[in-house]
Image (cartoon, rainbow, N blue to C red; front, side, top):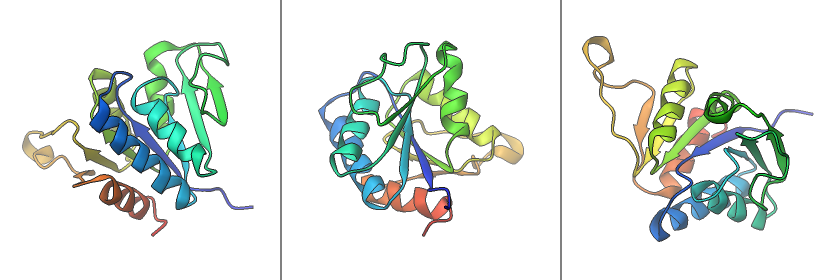
Length: 162
């Protein structure tokens, strides 16, 4: 049995109506494409993407900061309780073939950085805009999407599934 494509969706535990709407569309589209959603398993963006993905029969892996298997949102189909706090951000992106960053705060920025260190492609939507210096001036491996459908299409293509 072949491993299914895993796409991490990263974003803040504090979101708003528009970000929740975008997260829900991303979750639904990923699940309908047969991808497994990986996230931090908490509230906000993570809960919205989880609810939408499982609502259409998809699978969601929540990688939790806590060591309590019940600390995640109610929509997770699989839970990894790490007990390592914010360091779990590395586990989230390391468990993905590609990463979608939606909105976000400092934790999301760390996930983008970890993803690029691991050479995982990152698709941003209403998230951090990054530039580097010298050879990194164009922030290679990071692509901005125009909407949730574009973000999902780019992530699946980057993961080699489209």
